[in-house]
Length: 80
Length: 522
Image 1: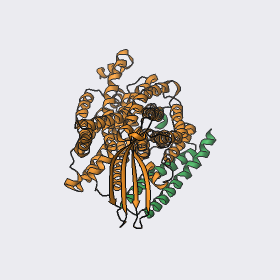
Image 2 (image 1 turned 90 degrees about the vertical axis):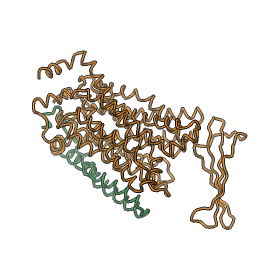
Image 3 (image 1 turned 60 degrees about the horizontal axis):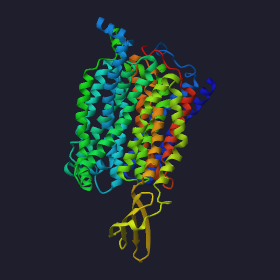
């Protein structure tokens, strides 16, 4: 199970930059198709919100790859 | 000190078992009101668009409102950080009292803001500001209430007792829909006049109602005591000095925050909003079911499904939280297309038999087509009755061009379903809300158990509000956007929820533990 966790970590790590690229590409396409303020605002909001989340997904993937999730803490002392 | 120790010692006695219901009631009522406050804005999005955003382009107005709506959700994670930190520093009780005051004040104030016609662009700006305050307050409320109840609960019933808090989001939505419908009907003896008055000024009443509800809730909460676990930490001087740094600057805790977000709350958020908000929006805007039926269908579904929050919360105490939540996600992603297709089918005119003698012409008019000189549109609106009891409005538009060639377009709107189809729709929404109860019922206990007491409020609030607020809150917005990009597929909006919940299911299944933490006191 731990090897699956680590292998999938690569997927989550790569999914982060992929989702940022896909988001920006779609935003550029949609803004070019409808260059009005509303379109720019809504896609601007999406980018501002989802880029940090994608970075979080990369960190999650990195931790998974490194085996940080092989064992989950069972009490608070392990989180100190 | 001795009084406090006696209080702690008595936590496991039957008297305290009875006392927990007071804790649950006081926490739940306040949280329910906060959700009510937050949802009346969303439920009245189209009416508010007319009042506060420049007229002329209804789509722009609606998008502006939805953007405001989204802004309300986007600031929720910031509220989680601000109030979560406060809750871990000064205590749960005063923090979620503060969020209640902020929410109630903002909601009441929205009901007082003059419209765009009166004060121009100041109107949408003030509304946006107040909406942001609402989002900030909500971001601080839920984590406090869930933590507060969990820290009072006995170990073996944590899922059951916190599931009462979990009912509040759905009941807040129910209350908002109920107050709106009641107000819409009560402003005049003539229903059409009543609706006109509601759209003109009556929409403000549900916002004003909030101040009364919040007043009652503040009174109740003032009588509550601080969480025993937090008080114990405070007396031992073991509270966190910097909850934000400890929550997100410490790798051991950050990895649990990320796991909570990507393995639980992200999927929970989209299932929650798809099953309730998007489903209601879908039957109103895609299926074209009339305003009232599209709301009463959801109301019945919520009333029938709400007890399931308690069922799944209680069940999670016996078999663990993980697989109940993940089963809800799996069922949702594998059946969304089928269920939404059924909703389209029951509102489709195909397969229905018209009672021709009952057809009634409502209006007929001729008007020039905007931006197309020389072209005229002949619009005939009729009320059409069907043998299954359904009544649809049929709009036939004949467009006559300069060369006298003619094109005809027929659409149906304001559909009132017959009794059989109505209850079928209620059933499908009940199933959707049932999925919501599976993913949402156990999640408060799940989150509470992931984090230690001294940084619990901060640590659990952020992943909850990113998952529920950002991923979930943007569901109707992104889904509507997808349907405008892929115009030939009316179900394309579901792909957002399916992809997000699918990823969350895989992460949850592989990484999340099903163990119940026996000791949240640490």
